[in-house]
Length: 141
Image 1 (cartoon, one colour):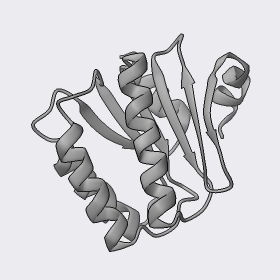
Image 2 (cartoon, rainbow, N blue to C red; image 1 turned 180 degrees about the vertical axis):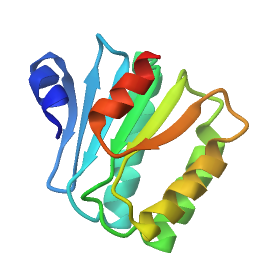
Image 3 (cartoon, rainbow, N blue to C red; image 1 turned 135 degrees about the horizontal axis):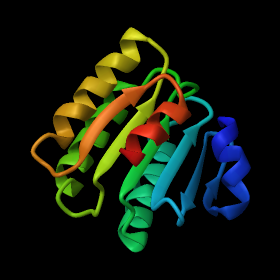
Image 4 (tube, rainbow, N blue to C red; image 1 turned 90 degrees about the vertical axis):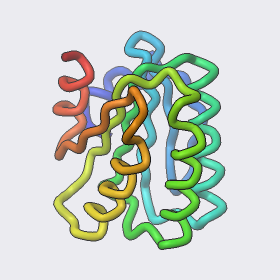
């Protein structure tokens, strides 16, 4: 996790701490944050994503940030489930902006391109960044 969020971690509500992903909510920023630590199984991905959706709805979060740098390859099965779920939920949340922090990886690029298509048509803007700081700066614009 980048230093900016580590410093604020004490101010966050922890929704999940697992060996594959941590989920935090920063109420002062209206920010939902997930940090992927390793490649999840389909069940782990579904649990994490479902927790995120409920957290965003419950807190009326405006911003969502996913750090996928350590997530590894996303299986076609996970991608299919995630895209279908995004399509069902994209008009049911308060999100204004969503971002992914990622390395330049062609496999992640494909996953992110699919995510971008899934959220198109909603009021939520989507972008990718190489660092958490750049994503947080974009949320503040």
